[in-house]
Image (cartoon, rainbow, N blue to C red; front, side, top):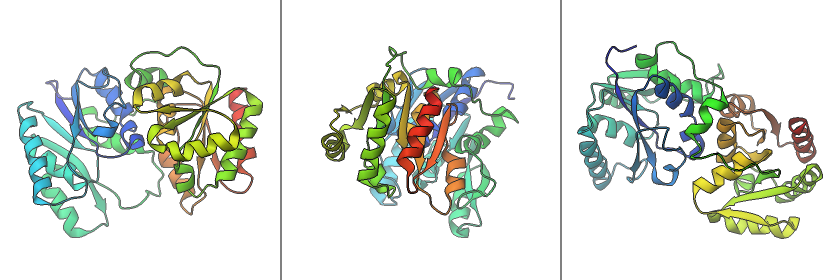
Length: 323
């Protein structure tokens, strides 16, 4: 442990689930009273509560772009953040913009990942922008670590061999701004990611109908996915609650008795705050490693592969969780 309390910036330029994988790391920093800021994409900036970090900085530059205008935007943000005098910058993203931002800030310690066995020139470029590089597999690690454990490695200079907490009671306040009133309904995340994962529309409707046998349902959807959600509503005969912002959506998940969701942001919200979750993953070749990496972290859960007959297995799993 450092003798002087550090000032830390974490850069995470990825989706909601990726951002939430930082929660155990933020909890550890909070226990040690470290000063922490986090850089997130604007659409994910509300995923944490105000107690999770001193400040959430929004990254408005483009991802995976080396255009001169984009590099200038990164350098401008880096120059603005230099005044905060961070002692450590943790690059918790594979996007090149995260590495460029770390270099532009110029903190004494800049820790990030490079891909073991990946492209040599890219690795060399990344190492030049870091003071410490941690090798990780270019694909899914066959050792099967959870993403929370992988991200925790970035903090070894600060936390030593400490391990990430799995206690939802500790993690929940970092995600929720307030405690919602309990809701006796079972939540189901309605998202077109069901289709993007190769899971058929009729199967999702079948699962919803079966789940209705275990209690009143609350169908949740992002406003931007209203087209898919309305099709589900019409087919199931149930209303859908639409959410334009993250805060009320998080509270709906927190209030539910349980939730059924594909591998999506809802899975990771539930997984951090302790809402029992039935998580449905596509049965790809790397199914076991995907589950190991992205399973709900701190909540009671059951994992279901979306093979033939999965709606029945998912609702059986729901019954087990409710029991």
